[in-house]
Image 1 (cartoon, rainbow, N blue to C red):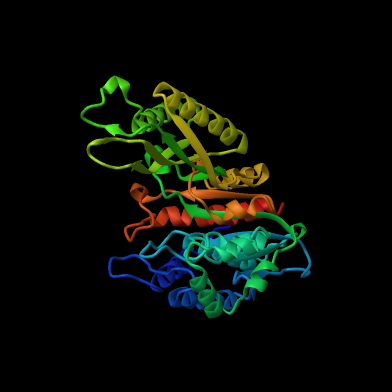
Image 2: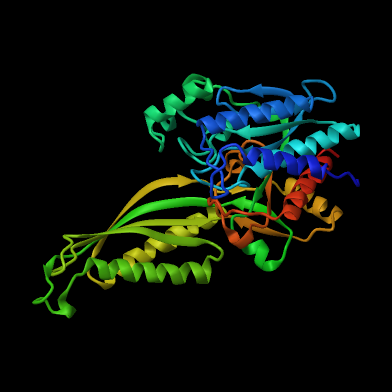
Length: 409
């Protein structure tokens, strides 16, 4: 179908929303549960009701705006993202997805096209994790737990205060799971936050999945010694083992597990003196890949490398598993709808993984879901300089529009 969004209205909404929490540097400071976040929610509610959509807010503060061209209990297609930002962030992260969804649904509504599904635009609460990452989408999908609410990274008291400002409660957030049988699909538009599309001069990225994340503390244990008097050949230097492991890990992932990634973000040496051979080297290991099978293989290979590095330096290695985030593969039928939409619009597209977390990560185990990316200038994001060009914003919104039509066929 040749239907296209109302570009003037869409860009006006983007510009207006960017003023809520606007910073002098040109960015947006709109963390979840803040006054700016509440103002943005009111703004979204007004736009949705003016468009004739049915607005509701669930126990986790998720806002949904539904177009009901037929019966209320018809199945739905869910579309949207989040309006909250990181502190001193940018104008497009999350907001583009919500406003493109709103514009696409409003355009379909105005066209008079008869669809077999209702369309529901969503603004998820606290995607960025000011208090608890993916708070709203986890609640929506039923994966939020009381334990997570007890230990939010933003602080327990701060979370409770934020929930009070928003008018929600712990019990409400734990009991607002939707029925997955009510939904046919979910689709989310987002800026890439990287440079792959820009460097390849590709218009649309079709996200095949969001990577899983696993992390460990690895502690290499050797023997403290005088750094001047102990011969180099006789040392059981824990840092030598740790550093050899990380170099081997880099080669392993680049050679066998592309496009997976591995990182050591922290290291602590004990006893920690200039003149003492390290007796212990504790490193924070994190790695990411697109499926649980790939993560299992990568984990086994990395831990084998750690044991080999320890043995080579006459060390022991202690392995402490930490938190994990499960990989979230996309639904093939939703990806195909996105690709067909891009073809309709004569836009180039490619499939790629997302190495950053998004609300789709919580929703994809719940209902069939996929994402699409549009290019980010220089890959800058979570920064006031974050920029996606106007034509790319419009392209993304039109792909969302056409995707909804194809998912409805």
